[in-house]
Amino acid sequence: MTTTYPYSDGTTTMYTQATQPAGAYYNAQGTTTPAGVVTTQTVQNVSTLGALNTVGAVGLGQTIMTQTGGTYLVSGHTMDGEGHPITHTTRASPATVQWLVDNYETAEGVSLPRSTLYNHYLRHCQEQKLDPVNAASFGKLIRSVFLGLRTRRLGTRGNSKYHYYGIRIKATSPLNQLQDDVNTTAMRQQPINSGKRFKASTALGKDGSDGSDITSNTHNAVVSEAQQQQNSHQQYLGDATQALPQFSDIEFGESKLPDGVTKADIKAFQCLYREHCEAILDVVVNLQFALIEALWQTFWRNPPTETQTNTNENEPEKRLSKVKLYALCKSDPVLRYLQHYDHMLYQGLVEVLIPDVLRPIPSALTQAIRNFAKSLEGWLKNGMQGVPQEMISVKLGAVSAFAQTLRRYTSLNHLAQAARAVLQNSSQISQMLSDLNRVDFANVQEQASWVCQCDDQVVQRLEQDFKMTLQNQNTLEQWAIWLEGVVNQVLKPHEGQPDFPKAARQFLLKWSFYSSMVIRDLTLRSAASFGSFHLIRLLYDEYMFYLIEHKVAAATGETPIAVMESLLPLANESTE
Image (cartoon, rainbow, N blue to C red; front, side, top):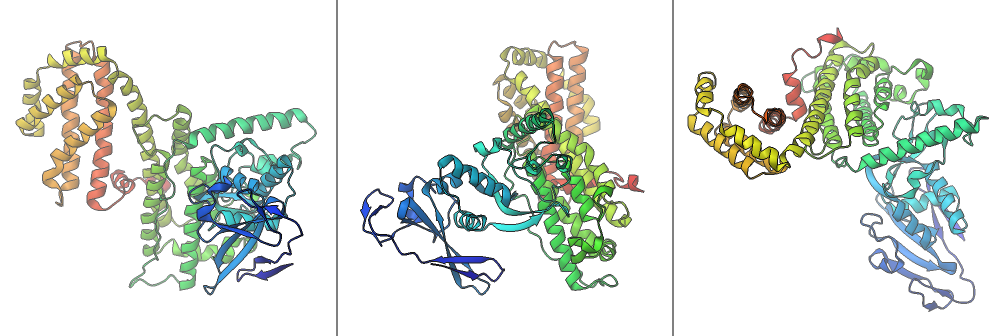
């Protein structure tokens, strides 16, 4: 007998009371158990099942129970709206539980359509010759195995679907090769508001055909290739779980709310902005860069012509009208709020896309990031047509710094890989050391001292350290440690002082001047290793800038993106 009780949120849970048939059945250890007895195992003891042996897959308090036919009941414990425990029980074969753990994992900022998960499950049952449960029961199973999943209706109007938010297919799963739905073709996880990306595919029939098998097969082949490439690039991305900032409330202080705007409207704006940031992270993690423009258009109520609908039926419009949204765009507290959290969001995205500027990155991924950076400002301007100029200036300043940072870091990464080959070549290193010993450093110092006014002993020590590091044929990573040591040594007297940013900028200028003087001397001497020195010099100058940028950010309590924006002269003039 199965009894269904409603949750406080409208969903239901099942309490199963079953009478066991006569006879015996087998428990997880394979021993015979008398009929009518249910063997229970907690998650601490499920290693014998060969399933659920994955960290985070199942939460504490879940139970695997053996029943007739080798079917397991997965019991999950949740809380209702008043904090009372609710237990629901879902039937699942051990093969199905194992299959779920093997192929899916929890992750922040990603989502999967419920229909996609269920279609995968039906295929699994067909392969294993199992009787599938219905979609509702499968949903309870998913929530029992992966605790904390949320359900959202995502996508543009007319093309939205219910998604499980917080779960994705593992990179190693064979499910990545499947195409069970034309509207979820190109990527492993479909991001929020992704209807536009797949709009071109809707001309195909539900079975993927439009009367032309050749067209369908070509489409599927392109999708499969793009999907495989994206999956291979996932391993180069950083951890996205910490990319989103911890959003606080907008502080108005003594400032008045805009006319017609209530505190409830402020709350609605904060929720919309937070969801907007989650959606941006989602598409970036999935490397679906082209969807960013659609997200901006949707947030700022500038949908493409072909997707425009009655705004009264649009969900964001119901939560916060366009009139009130644009009124908030002129409020100083709101402007400061968005600028601050845009900086934090974009910094998180940089660390996801390029977690280590020295680590090799596939050229295809590098080019995709550079193309993304090149398009950002144009996409933002297109998405913010009609928005008050005050807000456009704030948003464009942050996104310009984001774009420039991506361009600089990808260039730095490219230089690092080129220089790595030089630093690993012992004959080139020997030639560089020989040419460097012929440089008249006394003359270089004499000419540079008038401009830089550096301590002679410091310059001489850096010269000797550089030659020693070169002679030791250090790796690129060891050179990076040496360069950071130089920065720390020079800036140590200024730590905690108001002049730290100025001292850091002055050091960059002096470093660049000295290195250009050395390169000039090598050029005049027609040094055989001039090309190698030129490459190394470019890399070290870029890496010094990278280090200084982060040191200043740490000293001022800002993000490197915010520091970069402060260095962009009149970045927003082009919007007028």
